[in-house]
Length: 120
Image (tube, rainbow, N blue to C red; front, side):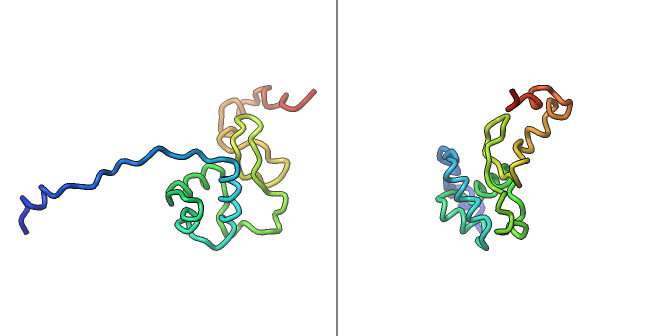
């Protein structure tokens, strides 16, 4: 093989276009599709997104493994976090803070901000 010819072969540019923000409707559609037997690639095609974007968003909103999602969990749905307002997969009405907010030092130290949200 001629190494000189291999080096001179132009490469395709690997630049990506600007990312598209996830709307609440997109997140809801992702959750609906996540509970089906579709693969990440199939979900990405239906949402007109990259497969990696689907996997990352599912991880960020804490979607459970597909085997754990079932119709019996009717109280589970996407809710906005009471602190950062980011939509996340909540297992029920008592789960109102997303995991990143629960991992914060304020949450772990019992900051009063969390205790006073929604109170009189």
